Amino acid sequence: MKKNINILGTFVILCILAVSCSKDDSSTSSINMIIDHNCTDLSKIPDDAINKASSDLYIAFNSSWWRGAEISYGLADLAGFKGALYRINEFGNDGQLRFDANRAFGNVNNIENSRDSSWYKVTRDTLKANKKINVVMWSWEEGVSEAKSSEIDVYLNLMNQLEQDFPNVKFVYMTGALDGTSNTDNLYLRNEQIRKYCKDNNKILFDFADIESYDPDGIYYGDKLANDTCGYDSNNDGKTDKNWATEWQKTHAKRWYECGPDQTPPLNSNQKAYAAWWMFARIAGWDGTK
Image: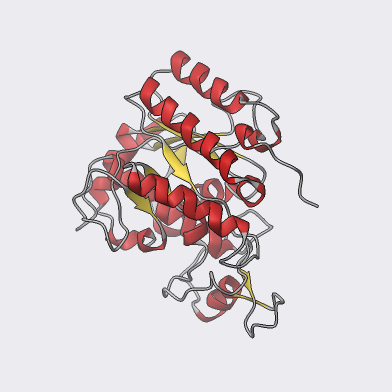
């Protein structure tokens, strides 16, 4: 059974410039970066944009348990699949992307189980102490699924306050992972609330839920009770009976790579890693076109 989660203790931030790869946004826009399933084609990102991101960015990332950690796992193993260009480490050695996961914020790890706004305080304290950090990321676990509209407003307002107080840091908003519910249920409504706020207020959004709603061929599963392990209801009987990621992996050998976490198929983490690199490249000044 899911825990009752206070939204004040949940959030995701990622610092970057605001631009978007969504189909309805200008490729040269400097605002409204919507990182979604349209941003998962790694081949479209120029090598020089990857190199610039690696040299310019210092990313601090905390994730609750395994959902947000899909990004970390995917990034960690990508170089073994695509080459040294995509190497990361927590210190930024040897020209690698500096990706400090689950260390930058000390002992505050599971943000969603906090009953207060400790995530907000630790973010402020960390950024004051380390002015080199220019990418900060916290991920949702189950918080969006259980949130009220007013609680999402608290999240949005505190994120906005961080942006005002740290103008040299770009904060990325994030939707919650899919939970097997429909497009009329709470998760979808709260994710839409976050999406609308980001688009209306020129924010940066890593649309976690959207990325795991589509397979690499662009087939949509978000209206089929899709969940965070890529399971879905194939025959509309209200039961999860198939998994789009494992199905795709079976028919596309050598087009995906093994990585964790164990709770979800590798392809899910692969897609999150590709989208993360797209976002990092945009931070570094890439306009989203070749």
